[in-house]
Length: 350
Ligand code: NAD
Ligand code: IPM
Ligand code: MN
Image (cartoon, rainbow, N blue to C red; front, side):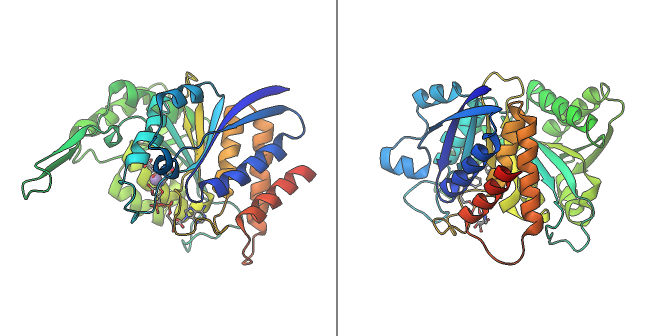
């Protein structure tokens, strides 16, 4: 039996509601004894900031580093909440975690599962993964504002793209493509963002030479949004930068049954720090505290977590239990806990 130490960050809004179900499923999936998990909960997020003024203290970050993995819910206040300046928690807590723990592969699978309704009339076989760069791009906070509040205000957000950072994520995407349908699509905007765009393009060309069996395609981000709606089956692996990847993965979620089903992993492929698994969605203040949130995205994130920790059987069991559950979903609405209970119960039986 392998013993794992797991940090759990429920966060804000629906975060704690969906994480509770994800933990139930984790426990049900490993009850057979191939692994044990010791859980340590960390109260972080917007509510925690309101109560304590803390975002992510260095000491907490150091404690988090000691775990084998992190399960994350969601953080952030309602867009209209004036008690919290927008961006504090997102930047100083969530992005600080992704950057400090070097989560350079932000893996976001998009698969239309059998029985799940897509808003697209003819979706076809949708099964792709977005490999979103997780530590660079416009997210680094390299910018500033001058003459704030005047008619002459100037605000900049400079995207940082390093050869090192682009190469490692591109190589990861090629590796994934080489064990899937062997097709990689670079999504960027090199017709306008020429400096970063050319670095990404050149890197795909160079690294691609190591993977002669992977076909390479390129789409500008604007055209990529067209094809994601008109012909999503064309995609296998998409590699893209941090911001484009954020945007297209909400779209990818929408076409594959909704944001309530979209899982992600913030992965440090070199394993120099724990990876972090979380639903793609946010804290959903509009439905928080009402047991209306779909915990499936958080539960599928547990499957990614198990896979990352080498527990492929347990991961497959969770994936299967979710697939059975979504296939059988009718129009009757269930609470967050009822969905988690049903999936856990299926794991206990089968
Ligand atoms: P959101 O993802 O929280 O919500 C968008 C819409 O999707 C809402 O209508 C919401 O009710 C719905 N939704 C989200 N998750 C759902 C689920 N599991 N089941 C059913 N419906 C679900 O995005 P937003 O409204 O733009 O952001 C709200 C807050 O969350 C902001 O503070 C934002 O910064 C933060 N945020 C955090 C993360 C994260 O922690 N990783 C991700 C995105 C947004
Ligand atoms: C996500 C979120 C985050 C992002 C925000 C909250 C920082 O939208 O995980 O997709 O942009 O990465
Ligand atoms: Mn997002």
